[in-house]
Image (cartoon, one colour):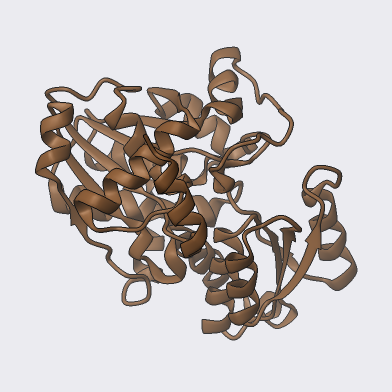
Length: 321
């Protein structure tokens, strides 16, 4: 299997230079006190299009040849990758078609259309988005750019960890949200090269622990669409590329409850003055609940995104304990 490596991540750094935001790394004395650790929050909620996904999407489209760019791209996503593909394609003057579930947050659907992409809706509980994406690719001659199982997408996501470690220096632990595994595997490639002693952990919602089960069983486990507020992590399985990197380079996978996500969102809003989405709170929740032991360690935390509409955000944080 032709896996991406750190050389691919460095190429992505070059492609994204001056295009992607170098997002801030924040700290919180309160969070450090509560956890007994030194926490560094990489704020990808402040990235272009509101999430880390812009990195992989732009890198993948920028790597296409001129024929592929003229034909256009197709992808599928519950929201953040959709917006990222649409925005990156608009910047690179490439036509984009994006499959989105009919129950995706209205804000994310509107943003994807607003960036100029054609949105095709499907039923995530009854239809196979990957099959629809392949069919559209074949029928229209489009290049398929999946949300995580793609060399250039993985490499692009890894640039978030490059920036984090360049700013903080070596870390003992890096906590990353886990859906299909693009961010986790890309960050693992970067951490292995820049901070070899750093343990990388993927964090999933309890209802969608396919990655955890896959790591335990040594094979890709497929599950039904998980019922969780973390809509960006409602994936049903890891990718072939991401699974191999995670199996080789990731120390473990932990899970957190939806209640822990609500609490983490509220904490970040109150103490750090940041609005983050439920999926973006996965790694934060893992540190605050000690789902992964952090005490006494230097810990990087990737806040993956902030694309949540105000009404839903308010309802979630009000429901927090």
